[in-house]
Length: 89
Image (cartoon, rainbow, N blue to C red; front, side, top):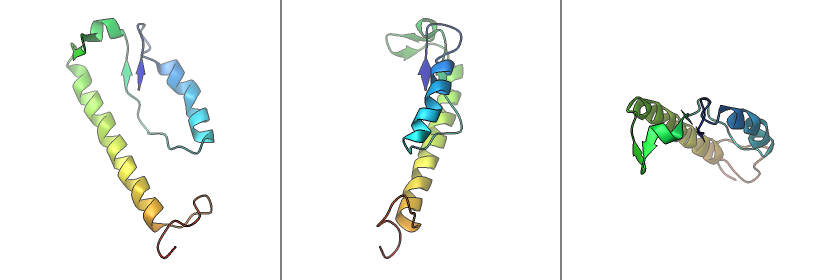
């Protein structure tokens, strides 16, 4: 998720961080959530632009789905990168 006071909503930071996150062995979601012009999008923590609600919901749905899939994979599939994980180990 990216936030900025300009038009890109943290897009450049997210793009720069993806290779680093992958190098650390972490999973990256397929979608991003950007909040450009944050000063016009939030007021005292309240979302002013309701168009972001669907975007946030879609992003969170994917995040939850991905976490469930990865949890299942760690519990059920052996991996050379995660020794001692998987059925019967």
